[in-house]
Image (cartoon, rainbow, N blue to C red; front, side, top):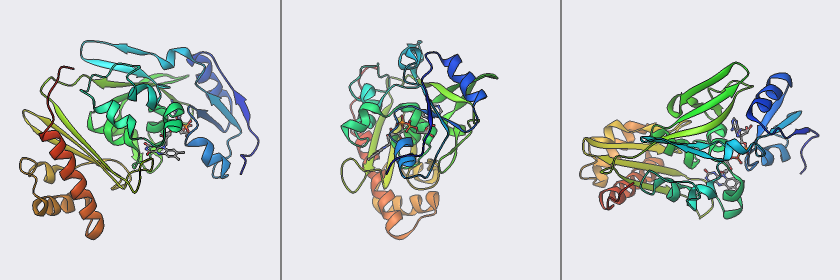
Length: 272
Ligand SMILES: Cc1cc2nc3c(=O)[nH]c(=O)nc-3n(C[C@H](O)[C@H](O)[C@H](O)COP(=O)(O)OP(=O)(O)OC[C@H]3O[C@@H](n4cnc5c(N)ncnc54)[C@H](O)[C@@H]3O)c2cc1C
């Protein structure tokens, strides 16, 4: 199917994009198009205007400080996978990026586009919530910094205003002793997760996050309490309490958390 007619805008600065979004009614930001265009092709959305961010050069660069790195909004999954931008998470971001869809999707799909799309089965919402990342936004009213944990409000729902867009994603540098594990359970490579577990092990304890379980990524406090020796019967009880799931779903999430934890426990720490 083909999308309904729309007018295409290609601003070259972030300020022009903000003005267009404020002036035009029924306008949508376009980034990699890997979620928006299929939705438009299926006529589930028919915005009158698309404001393409990909010609704005400043949105594809990164800036780095001692304790954090900020990726431009149109940084693609591929750029993270191939480390065309630096990684300061000891390999977590490149590994996560490499599991997203297929190569063609990773070449175009963007970090900020995935966060704005807010699909809880997708990689970036869960991972960026787990590492406590924040998005930086712009509108004609000014800039905002929104923690990803506050940005994600529900299925395909965020705290962004209609005329506001993400300009960058700030990720804190991992402490040298932080270890991580990531496990994506999907029917086959290239598909969205049925369960997505992220384990972060720090000297003061484990932090566990799960995607594809609810409408937003969730933290698993009960499961964190049994993370030191993750045996399946204990995990089943704890994951059930944390997610409210039972039966097959609970089993799926418990196994995925166990695998993420095992990966984290066995990970060697390298300098970041
Ligand atoms: C076959 C297929 C398989 C896939 N598999 C996976 C997978 O396994 N894991 C996974 O995580 N994803 C998967 N995806 C989704 C893919 O990662 C998308 O690229 C991503 O979800 C959206 O990023 P985008 O840059 O393409 O955004 P777009 O499609 O351009 O936009 C998506 C939404 O975000 C908004 N938006 C985009 N950028 C911004 C911004 N900077 N500020 C505010 N709003 C913005 C748009 O207006 C739109 O509403 C898959 C997609 C396809 C088609």
